[in-house]
Length: 167
Image 1 (cartoon, rainbow, N blue to C red):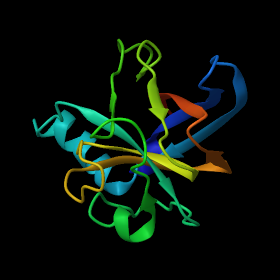
Image 2: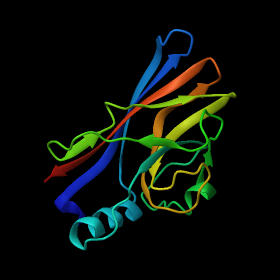
Image 3: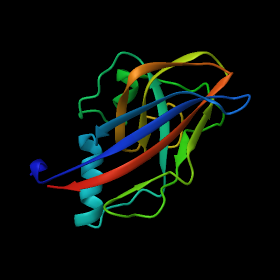
Image 4: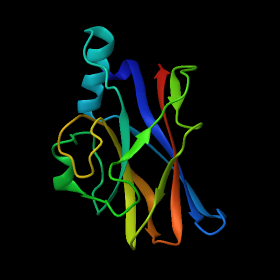
């Protein structure tokens, strides 16, 4: 059944200098939705299941290579979630209008201002807002093509979008 259509999230990540917003580096990454997220989507569409009120973007470090078996409960055992950025919770994913089978947060980018040195290897999208949470549902986990060294002099700007592709 999975061969009938594909879906996933894409990420455009810009590293910017905090002093003036100048672009230092940009990357593009894409992934498929982990099984847990696929179940949530199918349940919401076909079985009138619960639709999450909000989604949240988090960052992680570590050598892990996502394979689609991750869940919100297992992610903390696979990667190290980064918590050293501004705000008490993960960043809110605010999607715009749905068009052509997809939507993105282009009108409300997720901004991560760091308070300490860190290495960012990837990002994820979860239904749980708390940093370090093991509850909720994982809808995306992506490893960036290259690690991103960050510190208090920079911020990351993340545009993320979801797309269904008809086969």
